[in-house]
Amino acid sequence: MSELLERLVAEASELQFDRFTLDDAWVLGGRLRAAAAEAGHPVAIAIWFGQQRVFHAALPGATADNDAWLDRKHRVVERYGQASLLVGEEFRAKGEDFDVHARLDPREFAAHGGVVPIRIREVGVIGAVGVSGLPELADHELVVEQLRAHLWDRAND
Image (tube, rainbow, N blue to C red):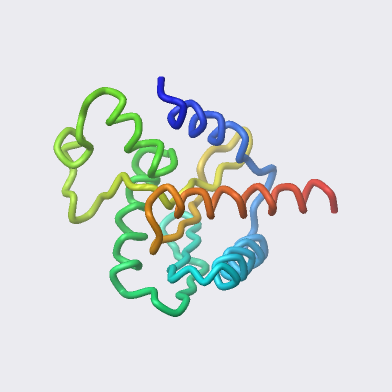
C-alpha cells in the first residue's frame, strides 16, 4: 500500500464526528472560506447533508467549472462512502483507471481529491464537505486541515 493510500485510510478512521448539525456546516464552511481567502485560493466550497447542499461559497477566481467538479467528486463520495481522493487512489493501487474501470459516466463522477465524507461514529456517512480549485491533493488537504480544526474545537469546548 502506498504511503498516500495509508494516510487516506487513517484519515477516514480519524475524521469522525459524534454529531454534525446545520450549525456545524455553517461554522465549518466559514472556517474553510476564511482559510482559503487568507491563502488567496481561488476555490469553491460546498457542504452537503445527503444530496442537499447546505453551504456554498466561491472565492475570487473560482468558476462554475469548480462547482461542476464539486458535484462530480461529491457523487463519488455518495456512491463509495469514502473521500474522493481515497477512491481514486484505491483504483490506482490496483493498476486501474477510475474513469474506465468504475464503469460510471466520467461526466458525472470524478475520483479526484477534494471531497471528504462527513461521518458520524456508529452511524456512517451523512454528508460531505469539499473544495475545488486547487490541485487535487491541495483541495483534499485543505478540507482535512479544517475538519481536524473543527473536531479539535468541538472536543475542547
